[in-house]
Amino acid sequence: MADTVGFVEYFEIIIYPVVALFLIEMISRAARIPNWIKLLTQAVSCVGFGVVYLTMHVSQWLTGGVLLALAIALFYQAKLSKLDPKKALY
Image (tube, rainbow, N blue to C red; front, top):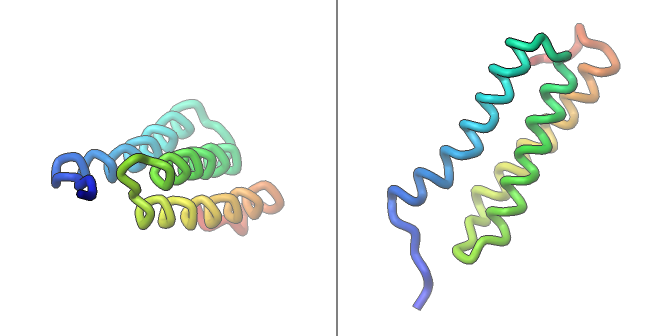
């Protein structure tokens, strides 16, 4: 029988990356960290959560895939922000 995840557990799985991204955003604003470092840190966080979710006992492959796709976009935005801060969208 396959393991299942209840609603509360699924909500927790989704909320952890969101909280991490929010905390990184708030800390970087408070500490006036450059935008490209913030985006890079958020991307690394998404990669970490994505890999964990893909390798969990109860695999969350769709959530992990979305997080990895978001990480790619964040890495790209970090690169743009590092090269020319005026071109960055975030």
